[in-house]
Image (cartoon, rainbow, N blue to C red; front, side):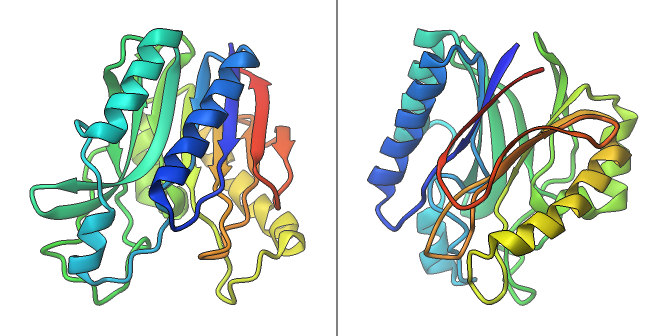
Amino acid sequence: MKVALAVNPVGTDRKKNLANILRLAEEAIYGRARLVLFPEAALTGLVNNDDPKQDLSLGVTAHGRVFRELYKLCSRELLWLGIGFLERSRGKLYDSAVLINPRGHIALKYRRITPGWHGKEADPAFYCHGDDVPVAETPFGRAGFLICGDLFDDDVVARLREKRPQVVLFPFARSFEDGKQDTERWESEKWAYVERVKMLGATTLMVNYLSEIDGCFGGAMIVSPEGRILEELLAGASGILFGEI
């Protein structure tokens, strides 16, 4: 099955961010991909600042206008689409991801378990986490999500591994503390991610967004269960990584 990992540019204009997501999805479809995966917080970037008044406005619901456009695209093109987003639900904010099936329905929904997407002092009444590690049966195998720091949590990795996924969808948002898009540093750091994939024992699709707002530098990889990089899109530019799983 042909897959596409889409490194989308993220700026302050959310309409433009969505337009770029839809454009890259169309490019993936043109390239005959049947599954396209976007990064963590792909609609806005991780620009939350632990102020609920601001940050709740970043969140979207899975039944709102943005997702209705994605559902229509998937049902029209018979596409599987995975995407990370800041989810607003009952006055709370989650770092979430969904997998949409070709009928335009959510086949799998995941909420990040680890807290690294917000500050240590963020109010837990508003900034919330998941507690489940679900999987879904798909034409490309049993699939599960992890988001960013979840990959480096031994308990979360063990819980997913117990469910024997064949494919792990890994949207993430990686930047460095100084805000510089240091692609050379990433070339060294990426091997830590590859080593963690070996603990999962599943083919893993990894994709980061590109943004000058927070320094996320893009990049995408398809990593084998044994920890081999099968396909890679180098950091530093938006675009699509195609591969087969």
